[in-house]
Image (cartoon, helix red, strand yellow):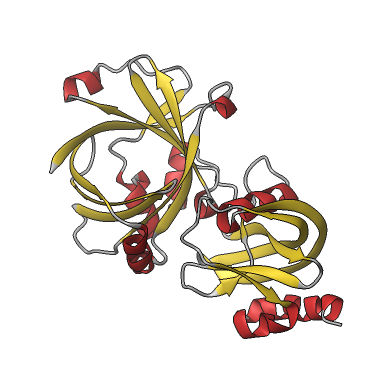
Length: 295
């Protein structure tokens, strides 16, 4: 195993001109193993896939990471069900370093942290951090990614560090129902290989519709126009309740590559929707779609 020497910090405020820096969407899931000194992680980063094993905690840890194929990732990913995190990672140059700034999504929406890697412990301890860095959390096990994925984040930690999540027990999501020629609708698979509509947590700073369009691109690889807010539904997730607003979407442009291209997607006739989508909470929406389009 190689050594991973890095420090992790919360931030006081986002750096200026963040939109000018490139970022990648990262999905990572963990195996739920009893040995707290080890972690096994699977990661999708852009169009690349990795498996990593890490040992230890804090500043200096052992790590081995290997590239895996998309097929291997798709096969292994279900093993991490309920033990996952999603984040946007920005690469920000700073002196001789690269700051990796992570904006967490879904149940950790509102958590923002950054990491810096070093070649030695001496170099790490002498690091002169930028002013927008906040409190260091290198040794805070509760805020390590694997701990977050496996156990979530409790209110004691939130209060200790002044972290304000956008959602705690109630979550707000939005999604799209992509319609083509008033004849077909696009559906995608979730991580359990069930057919659903694209949706996700409403991100901080975005409206419900804007966030729905973002999810359409990331989950289904499509762009288009929001037509109207069509319906709402609720379901249980993360020991809470998710409220979902669904938008009709048209003028669809379909991309060949997209961030979550491990998902399947399929255009189906409206009258075929009940054969694919089985989730009880979506049945009222399907019935409304049939009333509107299947005439």
